[in-house]
Image (cartoon, rainbow, N blue to C red; front, side, top):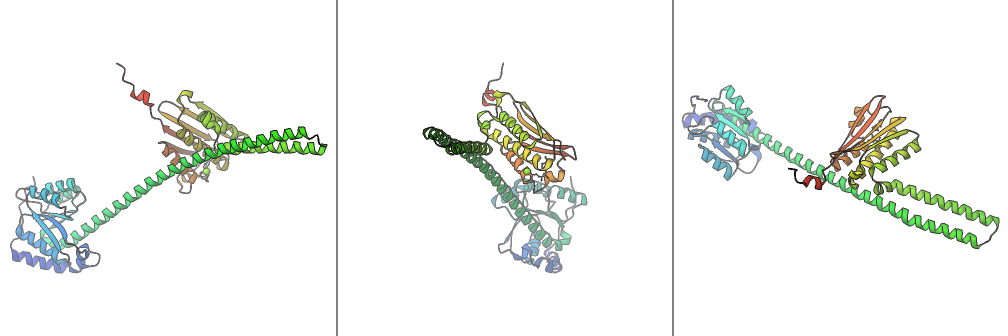
Length: 407
Ligand SMILES: Nc1ncnc2c1ncn2[C@@H]1O[C@H](COP(=O)(O)OP(=O)(O)O)[C@@H](O)[C@H]1O
Ligand SMILES: [Mg+2]
């Protein structure tokens, strides 16, 4: 296809003259500080695809002059090229374009397939502009013409530096990704631990303290009957009993705030309804709830908890930020997903608030949803309210998924 005349540097003398000239021209540049050719200790491993021996020697000489020991392996057939790539991958590949039985574009293709990270520079007699552009598109790092070999050392130097930078960047990205994964796992773990802890404390506070106080109240009543005391004494017993009642009430409230029992006993839908009623009573903001969940398809506890906590956080935000007078809640579930939407008629959250790094509450909701494989969306219109939507895909129950197809 590219039947171009082969142009080789002819003769040893010419080569050396050129090399000397190029070394002189390129000297200060390639020997400068920070040049990988000048600084690194190990010999630079180069795989050179080249059939002309004088050219091989010349390239070896030029790179040697640039200040770094070079371990150069020259090949001129496809078999030798592949064998060398597999035996010991070089740090850089230099390749002629026109070869008797092999060609540079094939070498490039192989190297991109086998070892895409190794920089690949064409060092060639003539390379038409179109071919050069095509080769760069195919992944070549650079190309150097043989009649301008003064460019070779700087080109090699730059290619090595860039590939080193790319490697460092990839490592940093990989590290970042891993630490992000770990952070997510840790967050998930903390959520579970926190929820278990809350459930346990709620139960203990409710059962232990509740029972102790109830016992105390009974004892007090018994005592009042035994001691036919004065009016003052009777009054005292009465006020103590009332005090115990208040404490029992407070304990129930604290336990419920820690973890609403209704969530565990009656499930998510009941807990959402209970929370909405409580919200309306406390704030005076009208809160309407619509539930489209069939009781037999109740989500599991992890999902219910995540959904309920997101709902609570959304209501807290409405109290704190929305200036709303009305809230509509819709909980729906089919066999594919669970959906909760909470819409208020307040001032409307802005795009900036949604994406702001300090919106920790929103970030927490997103993270909580992600833990159960779902997503939360925030949408606001200025003066027309905010809608928070949670969507969590549900996995088909095993029994259904595994049932044999009907004939
Ligand atoms: N329902 C809402 N209506 C209007 N603005 C809201 C609403 N919910 C959240 N915001 C805005 O988004 C911001 C981020 O919310 P959040 O991350 O929960 O932080 P915080 O509640 O701690 O301020 C809030 O500070 C508020 O400005
Ligand atoms: Mg908040």
